[in-house]
Amino acid sequence: AQKVTQAQTEISVVEKEDVTLDCVYETRDTTYYLFWYKQPPSGELVFLIRRNSFDEQNEISGRYSWNFQKSTSSFNFTITASQVVDSAVYFCALSQYGNSGGSNYKLTFGKGTLLTVNP
Amino acid sequence: AAGVIQSPRHLIKEKRETATLKCYPIPRHDTVYWYQQGPGQDPQFLISFYEKMQSDKGSIPDRFSAQQFSDYHSELNMSSLELGDSALYFCASSRRDKTGDSNQPQHFGDGTRLSIL
Image 1 (tube, each protein chain N blue to C red):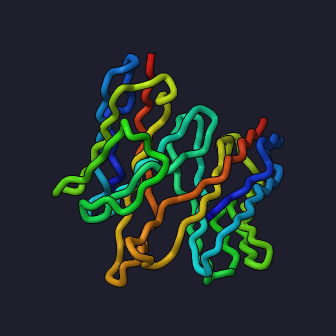
Image 2 (spheres, rainbow over the protein chains, first blue to last red):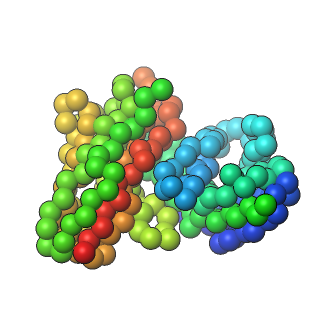
């Protein structure tokens, strides 16, 4: 069974602060995908990043960066110089990788972290 | 770029009524997934289809059924609606490459907000 844990239910920061959202996962699969999604108050799910388990290289995209550590089963997300528009619920998710029978890539989500960035 | 289209955006029903939610995947995407997100909850996988065949099933009630049509759009049919069915229903789509692996991240529609009175 797959499981994603986002221990931080809510985080509140002041604009321009850096903030890290934690994600720890459990899976029996040796290969898998990890995702981060953003859900603003308007409700849509916005894809941020997908990382496969082969690639442990950290990634940076503008103010966003991701730290994947297979040894600790963690895929943490850092926002640098946070802005009010970053306020949202952030979900970490996990899916299988590769053609396994009927192949299913359903996502298993964590409970989400509500990030509030105050001006 | 074209995105996943869901309709309607909002739907209000009464208990015991039926509802049909529609999903139009990104062009050339062959796989559709349905998720249910209750208030304050994370999205939960309901069901998925690949090339018009059901590929996986999650915690979908027997009162719900779904299918994928020849044009790859999908419909989620919900009957005998209950108060607990009030939720945001998301559809996502992806495309498999020649090896059978999904090389596309799952892109989500904006969701259908279903309210049961």
